Image (cartoon, rainbow, N blue to C red; front, side, top):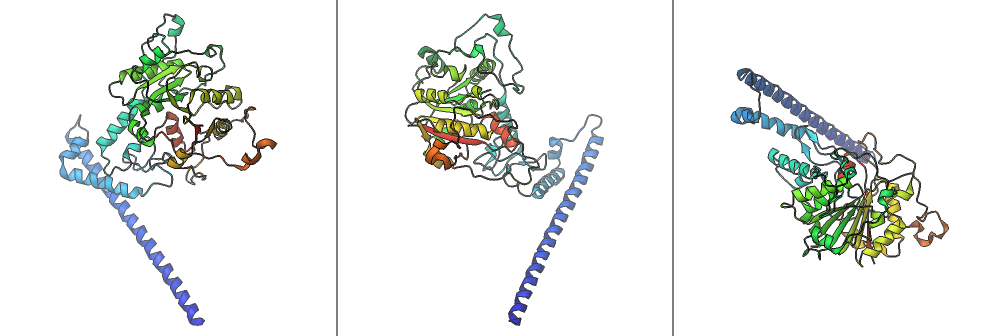
Length: 444
């Protein structure tokens, strides 16, 4: 026994010694790396000073000057390589894109179902990320986000419509700024149904293309989701949906955004990969009156929460009945929000309708979101909604006595957007580390 005890003690001591040696070696390596980085920065700063002194008064060091001197370029590239090594690996859940200029990884949350945030998604799987590639991708992203201001003709997004009403011309023009105020859907001006006919849709989608399935984004705001599906995300969406090529429609209550989005479509028509259009109306009032052709998918993404005014929320039992009226069997509904209470309410309203069930094929393809805590390195979780939530009285409460066997069935959330695209709000949620609760239902 004494021999066995002594052997165990010796093994433990050897293990501890080895661990201490490895830790000391790692610390020495980090110290050498830091010292070399500091030395290179001093040397490069001296080169900058000499160059600017020689080229005075207008000379400043630049990329072209570095490239013209092989020794200068070698030191610069070594510094960048060592800075990348010093950054280590991205933290758990963080975007895996290394930002060379800031000498660290992107601090946004990795997009749902990916290893990088939405902004850096094009770099997933790319081995060599050169400055020219980065510049091209960021320029393309900025191009899609720009809101094109239309000619102010009072058209409200209608194809071929015009108006001479002077009041309609005095509208908001700084739509590139953040939209801060929610539009009241119960206002008098939004209570008249918008009626459209086949001739309208024929003009919007060039007639012969009307037979294509239609994807509708309700509450599309500036149209980022539709723009993404019409351009960079078009092929990825088609692949994800087993070859389906959608016509795209954005529905938005704020008419100036509709005009701006249609102007964007018109300006970029030659480069778009899918047919897209936008209509201005109150979806809760006009959904069935729009007479939309061949509707196959309805998306309700990040609707206004209206925490203390549940009667103003988009997804209500009546709205879901309207969805059932316009969707054929197999038609899809996709809902999401970063406000959990609202996401749960939308989930319940749709799932409790007799015409809809969970889209199991989508859940199987995309995967389900794991329930996990926020990473420890996030200093303070930025909640999406900090106001008192008033539940919609028309939604069945889980605590009611008549819920039966469904009472203990947990809600199931998707791990990512099933259409392989994103909205402007998705990018905000990644930057603020807010989880997004997504669900998909199908018409039976």
